[in-house]
Length: 315
Figure 1 (cartoon, rainbow, N blue to C red):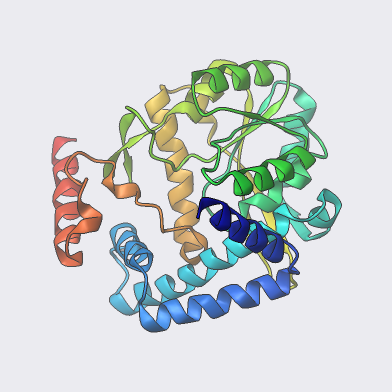
Figure 2 (figure 1 turned 135 degrees about the vertical axis):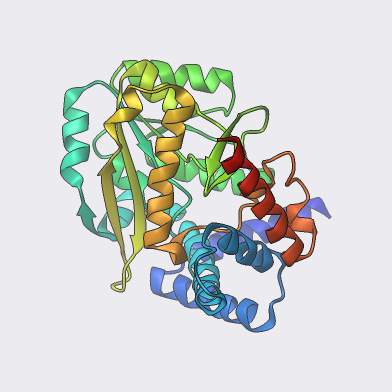
């Protein structure tokens, strides 16, 4: 049974990886249409809940519109990932049509002090690796995928991008630290919940267990730090936006530095909420909210508001 399952996965990966971007997007929009019409997945309810937690000032109609677009965009991103992983670096670079803030990147590389790129779960971030690899050696944390065929498929794509993959543990952190000291580059997705421990840091006003790894690396290595994301455009390609991070991140402690990163992320989400990947169950990373995604929607919102109000009172 396992062998048959692996064969199916392998065939699906090969099929989707060969699809042009327009076809991949068409398939994704068709799937999203079914999800939005029939409300057939638990994930769509997670997205709906997360959006209401983060954007409570919008009315129900506005949030529902964002939810429908977010579901479509997230499914499109996943389909685009397959196509990107199955394509050469040259082809992926050609798919990048505009780069805003490119000078920030080149100036940071020229300083030779190492570069930390903060890239949230937004848009189609996988397209950025091919462009970045033209100019710098990247050291990136990678957690193996449970399915062996899928893992080999993604690893093959990473090897084309000249990226050195390190484990998501202390040994991986040490290798990233060494690479930065030698003038290398790392890319970190900051909006994960750590597997163990973490610090309670406010995200949209809700204290959540969070990793302060990005801020620690920035502060300890004094490497340059930039905030970037990729967004699809209407010409079957992508645009990359690169921005500097508040320089105060070098002057504060690690938790305050993480708060600076989260503030940048919140600003981005307020600008383009429909392009953020809302399916991650981020808000259960609070001791009082562990069951938030398993209780009725209105009860979950009431519980979040209670935690948020308690946080304000404590301050």
